[in-house]
Length: 78
Image (cartoon, rainbow, N blue to C red; front, side):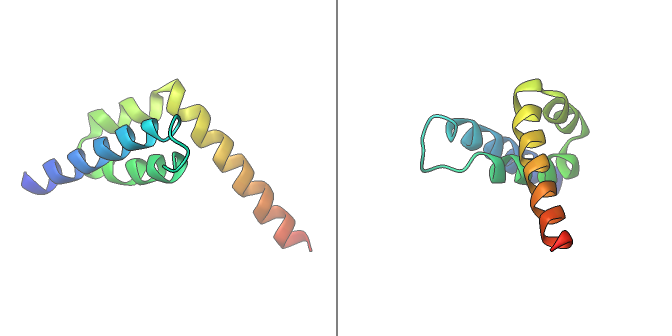
């Protein structure tokens, strides 16, 4: 129970700090969202579903994923 609570709190903290990072240029947004995607399912399925289904966060993560896929494809094709 304590382990799930810790994962949930850390995941939500990553979401909050990542969201603040949209406005504050020194805070990274996407790496914190990726961390939240890792932590939240381990802590709470309900928060994980909310975060993955949240359009605001999903748009940023999809953009990051597409960019990473394009970089990997360019590296493989060279």
